[in-house]
Amino acid sequence: MKEALENWQEERYCKDKIRAIDAKYEAQKIAFAPFSFQAILVLRKLGILESLLDAGDEGLTLQQLMDKHHLGSYQLKVLLEMALSMDVVKWKKDSSPKAFVLGKIGFFLETDKLTIANMDFAQDVCYQGMFKLMESIQNGKPEGLKVFGDWKTIYEGLSQLPQDVQHSWFQFDHFYSDGAFPQALKFVFSNSHKRLMDIGGNTAKWALACANFNDEVNVTIVDLPGQAKMATEKIKAAGFSDRINVYEANMLSPTSSLPGDHDAVWMSQFLDCFSLSEITAILEKVFKAVDENAEIFVMEPLWDKQNYPAASYSLHATSLYFTAMANGNSKMYGYRELCDAIEAGGFQLADEIHQLGPNDYSILKFKKRPVNV
Image (cartoon, rainbow, N blue to C red; front, top):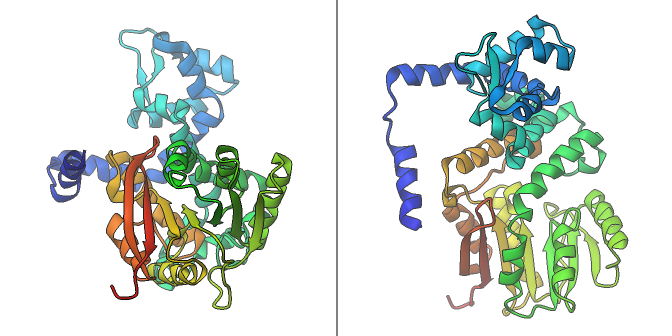
């Protein structure tokens, strides 16, 4: 598997074998990307892709789509012609009048949960703010976040975002990690941990999964006040207030510290919210809070440990969300750069597993580095 992974990455990132005419076509796709994105989004939101999916190989004519969706020929033509150029829809061969059928790309845009989560996240959370990407790059701040509020990071205002924006943010955030939970739980609890600290616990999904998986574990969630409040409500509703508690802390504050007496620390999709120097500083706080026997688990989708180019592409795009919207200084990390930042905080890599779940997550397990090493 490692050899196959390295082979596709070498083909993708080292070789430039595309024909010039095809390269020019791909360049036009980038030049008009905002146009095509919005056109396909509208086709999905109006239910037109769904109608074509239901029609199957028979397809639907322009008139049938006009009647079904109460739209004029002009409105449908501008959308469908863009979709034709993007291979989202196709013409049915030898049909008269011409019928539109859903292409393979259109099938994934309409039915694939990963694609839908990405697209809604791009539209609802990122689209307007991404206009400020250049300013964000130049200033090292998430300048696009100003479309929603005056916060230093999106996490400070997450609980105050509009409901549709929150929905798309959490749908995106949870979709990626949740599929890895079954394997992750087995890996973490291969040792009988009794007290686990979940840093960046968000809405308590992982903490609740742990409480359901292991009847003896107690979990402490560490997060910002807004997220802590949401987590507390979820914990109470699930009936686990006796085994899951919440500790409010801003890990970027120089005066913050972590509660002690935990034999395991869990950080899932948390460290990618910080710069490399900030990651090291956070791990230094973890170092002070745990003893030499504690196990530190970091779960991330590492972009250079993905099985398919589409996954790495999605992670590289997500890095730009961090730049323009989230905090201005973090990204989706590669394996080595993340390990180096964590080990600089006083830890050493003890174990690792990759390609967990449908979205190729990695779990890196660390232990305190002996003082004499």
